[in-house]
Length: 435
Image 1 (cartoon, one colour):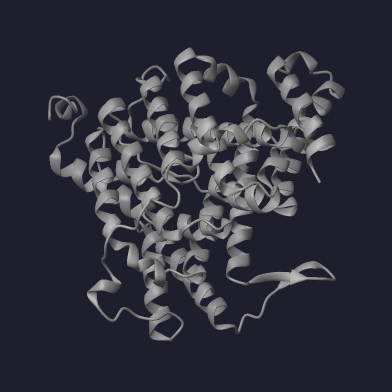
Image 2 (spheres, rainbow, N blue to C red; image 1 turned 45 degrees about the vertical axis):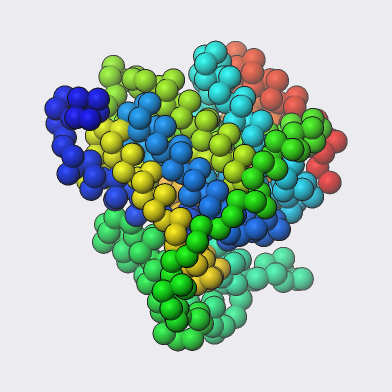
């Protein structure tokens, strides 16, 4: 094992890698409860989503550890689950089974693009500033959903949105959770988001907002059945060949591209694994990501992607794929804790959404705001996502305005031909598909 994972060459050992794997798991364990809470709004079975989430994370992370040998963990992605729920199913009115089929197709396309080398061309065609804007826009969108779930922000017929009743019990509990999570992260506590959820849930039990466990059966129990969701993506593949679903699949694909590429580089750089500014075994790492998306879709969850929280494990000493093997094992172990879903209410998960949104908005600082031709499409991408309640619409409007501003600025030669193709696709999207 030491030889396979190159412990000596990487200056690591079994203890360091094990601790790193556990640390990464704690940093991203919140997804086990946030994802079922999010996707269940589509009508999907919450227990099945929990099992699908844990298994997709375990399988994807295990492939990453054993094949690509990177200390990178995977799980259903934040932002992509919001897009799946609020834009595709609730917004477009697409059945969740068809949406899962769209995720499956995007994963299969990702695999093909990875092996053909086209993936790099597509990623390179999209300007870095737009990639950063997409990430920040998704962060704002996720945070907005968190504020809504906590009822800190509510509907208002006069102003569209307004401040909610802050004396409401669940809202007060969510505010408490935000404060606790902020304190933990500001104090550099690894796994602060997860611990914040635990503390918030306990506080909810103390004040009577959440029913406390009365037996061991309320904490551990049988693994929920995958029956309600398993294989639905395959059964509904024939429903994805519509103009609307093509846009959906492209969005799943683009966002997964950005998440994966950015995360792999970030984690590898922090671990000192980059060589000549290139990522060794990049193809295998990308395959792990795309394969995890395919597996997750078949099991019954939205797009599975690499998690930047893996950097916490690297900070704890993780350098090899064995850290990922440990993280995968932790996700499998978590399967028996499904009864805790009853205690993780929206008031408990809302702080996690808001804080993850804050972290995703860090990309704002790297956008070239001093260039008007960049600032306009970037700003429109970012602001449209939460206001239109659609990640796809935000991406579309940014990709439409980018060629326009660049041409007017006399920079038409800097526009990649692929961007012109996307320009046409998204113009048609606004003409025919947006209701």
